[in-house]
Length: 50
Image (cartoon, rainbow, N blue to C red; front, side, top):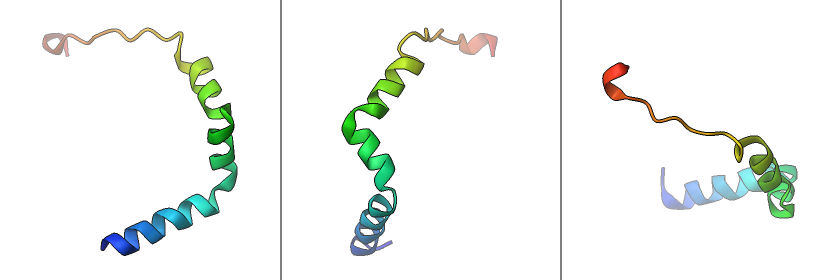
């Protein structure tokens, strides 16, 4: 891709997904992430045991 085309495609995507953008900007998305991921504990995987 050329930079100009990639930039235009990115702008088009954001304009086509205004609801998602509005949710992210409002903090709704951040709240969803916090609710769904903040209490999860990640357990390291032992590469030898995989």
